[in-house]
Amino acid sequence: MRFLFSIHRWTGIAVGLMAFTWFASGIVVHWYAFVDATDAQLLGGYSFPLDSKELRGVRLPVESAVGAPMRRSVLHRLERQLVWETETGRATATLTDARSGTRRAGVTLAEATAIAGRLVSRPATDAQASVITKPDAYYYEQSFRYEFSDQQSFPLPAYRVVFGGPRPIGVYVDPTTGRVAAVVGRRQRFTRLFGTLPHFLNPSFLRGHATLRWGILVVLLLGAFVSGVSGLVYGIWTLWRQRRARVPDGTDRRRPLRRSIADWHNWIGAVFGALVVTWAVSGYLMLWYPEVTPNPNEIARLEGGTIRPSDYRLSPESALTVVSSAGRLPVVALQARRLLQRPVYDARHLNGRSTVVDGRTGVILSPLPDSIVRSIVRAYLGRDDIIRRISYLDHYDAYYYDLHGRLRPLPVYRIDLASGNRAPSPLYVDADRGELVGRVDGDYRTFRWYGSALHTMDFPVLFFHPTLWHVVLVGLALLGAILSGTGVWLGFTYLLRLSRSSTSPKKAAS
Image 1 (spheres, rainbow, N blue to C red):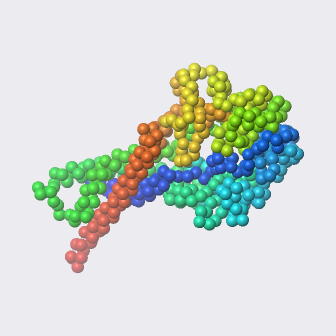
Image 2 (tube, helix red, strand yellow):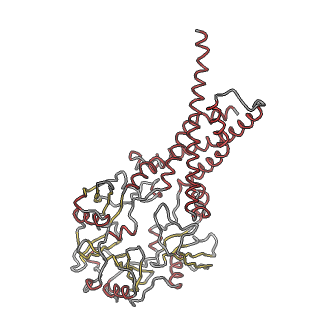
Image 3 (cartoon, rainbow, N blue to C red):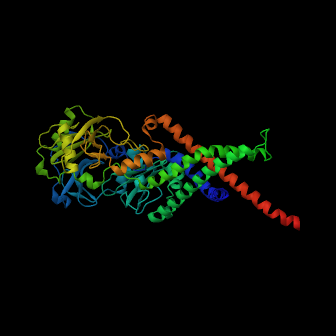
């Protein structure tokens, strides 16, 4: 038992400091704010809504104007000019003037400043704009899945437009397309500095060294696990021994303050040690972090190839008229793409919702009919599977939910398959756009319940009652921080007393 005591004491001091930092920063991470632009911010950067009258004579860009087959093309405003933003098989997008069809070289710094100012409702004269060619303290990550990889998720170079004053805010704009890439305000700065930086150990000097960061985090989690197990066993043994050794009147000869703190620490630690062990083990799974969001290759299966102007019998003007006649919200961007093999227009509204119009017939497809949903599932799986149930969800469920303010699109269709483990199930399809937005495979299912749920307590019974979830999670994190702090204090005082007792015979001999 003394061996366990030594392990717990020595690892506890070092790991206790780390655990205190992790628990305290974990509270901040709980309210973490992503820096990458939301759909509302992205669409807000497109200026004013489109008017069908001004689209008269506007046609889809031709392949020769963009230099490659077109995967999709978005019609929107760039300041006062109508442009097509076209994605090809290449890494970058291309801008063309919607009226003349001529190719643009990108956006200027002044245009990026105007876009940023309109987005945050601040005058452009208050901004300081510059060009960055490498990641900075905030513009480097898009989501937690990139914390442990060297993948660059943001376009570079980029325009950085910073507005000062009592509420400083920074906006990052893609110079190729004028698209808003990231927005950094007070909350993003605070949660980065006191949350993700210490919690995920991602200071700038470790960025780009994923293997080294992995190694450090694995060692730290191993130390927390060893300290938690040894503390759990030693704490129970200590409490049992103290109970037997205590004098009849219930007192002992230790100093009252240290004695009360030690008793409190041991009693709470015996219970909390089990949670620390669980937290450390689930922390390893958090390093794994598989995604419920499909990757680009999976999404490409549903595109059905490239688009051509000859595929569309409906002009952009007519498509916008159809949407407006249906009483839908104003449209800020009109995207031409394929839904399976069908050419469609995807009218994007300011609230993030969409209205999809068939590019040949002019029929509104939103929300998607059952037949198209089944075709999407068939195209994604590459075969026919038995569909057990298709549910229309206007709310989140146990697998598909928002993450730290990053709201996944709603409504969606949840498709449950009856094929066991042969295919991901359930699948989630955007009910308006027909895009696959989520799929639950075996890896994610394991991570969801043994990693995320145990580590962040986002069990449905808590997660769908936000106030209760905040109280439980923050309460446990506070308790962990207090317990780690008292453990470090007890460890230092013990070593100090041990040092004094070892030197006292020498003093007596002298």
